[in-house]
Length: 212
Length: 212
DNA sequence: CGAGTCAGTGAACACTCGTACTCCGAACGG
DNA sequence: CCGTTCGGAGTACGAGTGTTCACTGACTCG
Image (cartoon, rainbow over all chains, first blue to last red; front, side, top):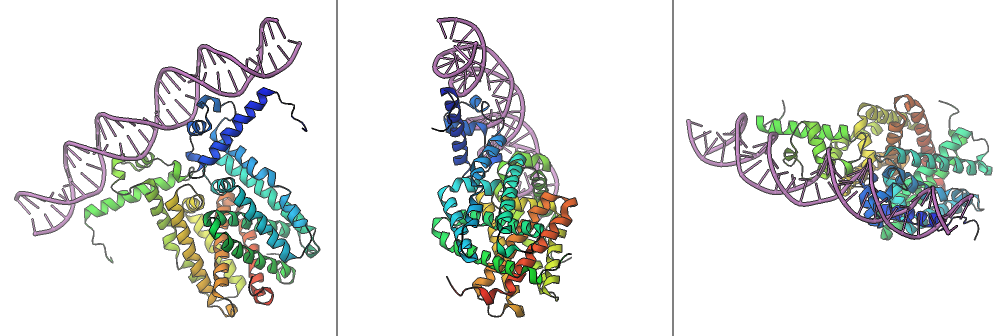
């Protein structure tokens, strides 16, 4: 339903495109994008190397597509979690839980992001940085609408949003390293860290100098 | 002076070994370790591919050596900075300044660390993680000896040390992305973030629940 | 001095890689 | 219905890869 105006042709095209993306993601579990071969991907996807060019110009372009696939659908989700009612403590726990659940559900996607955030492929780095900046802005916006944010400058809100987002990223990669059995401990420490930040937030206006 | 018991032979060996490390580091500026070719390195170092095996088993082993070279000499430095007298604000500014100076002095080394921290080469990831864990422990130890740390559990000190270390890493990679001209702004934001953490630290015992 | 060690050489191995061709045949649009 | 479009197959090429092997010659040490 909804709008699927595509014919059989475009459907098949999208199908193989997705096969390429999936195959690449599976291969990227144990290596990084810069060492991923075009042929390697097509072999795993069950297509000929030449077919790759019908969908992506580079493996770099494929990487950018993977970034969109992973992070593109996450926007708004954080804002939604932060917008729910409850005190700081509750919202904090919920946020961490949401992250842990997402990472547990699609580990390969987040491993890819963590790996390529500082990886060797420029366009992919840029795509990830752009998405994370958007996240930071969204978080800052959500924080700005809380009552506790009165008196905060826009710059400090962005700083705080970036802080939260960076910690989100760190937490995901720590979760991936820890594996399922270490998840509980990682979540526990992550919550403590965020709690400390929250406490600092509550006293920010009392003690932070106006300017430097 | 000191102890250089090595003959001409071992000296030359160490010289080419260093040439390999330097060449690799230069090449790693624009790519990641997993895509770094053995031949590529030897070519840049002015040696034949076979000579590589006299020094390293893998490119992975070379990566581990690079980790040691970059982070091995940094231990104690942080503790020294933190041990200096002055209030939190001063120590905080000094720490950030030290980081900025080191990153500015040897950007390639830190770019390598940031890139391979979550990169595709397992042994290198492990080596970096081990070094960072040591840093976190050292920071925790230094913090524990301050008067303000009275009443803190060892676990919370480690949590805080890890928080500082992770932020150190984030700051370095942000500095690298920003380049020399953006350094001042990055340092400014980094200081603010640390200040927020410090404020949270000051009120931690008042508001943090005992256990979860 | 002379035997032994060993860092580095050079050639050859069997691959994999990205890319440029031509060609096929099913889906498309007038 | 028929000509066109186009996703994908197949083949081939040159370049680059990691690794092995026998070898050389300068340094080391008894």
